Length: 243
Picture (spheres, rainbow, N blue to C red):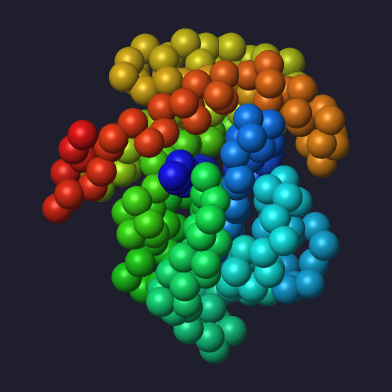
């Protein structure tokens, strides 16, 4: 089974848009897909504009939202702090159970993180913990802006150090502002600095919620190359990536 973990270099870099594009491509190829947002903060549980609901729609799943997004917290903070301030505790066992149920009878599972890979879920656990725990292969989404190189390299190195395979980096255009020098050279720079990791671009979409325009952008992008790298025999064995 394909097990994708989509993480970002920061919040607001377009993880959900890229995740929806990946889900759409896999469904177009005839795969049965499931999606999960383990924790979402900064909104009410019944908010129709949540990332989790967008992922569920892209996956075409009938799975209950209590599994797609087991934990929803009001304050726009890291999950651990948001839960602490709400007087709640996040159970990793509960997240494991939801992930296990969603992973049944599907060909591909996509898990979208929150913010970056080291965002704390509990005082001891981060999204890196979940990626290792669930044997996910990572796709890193970075906003094409000044600072993208440093943030991307830090994220990729953290994943590699934890023996999480990195399928690739998606450099996402988050607006249609004129290109400055950083935005014009980030793709070339990252491709040179990460020679063993595909770095692909994804275009700015004026209406990312529109499924048709998202599908066109996904089909024209190189996202399929990243999906094709998934499940090539990598496994995490006592902290080492083996084939």
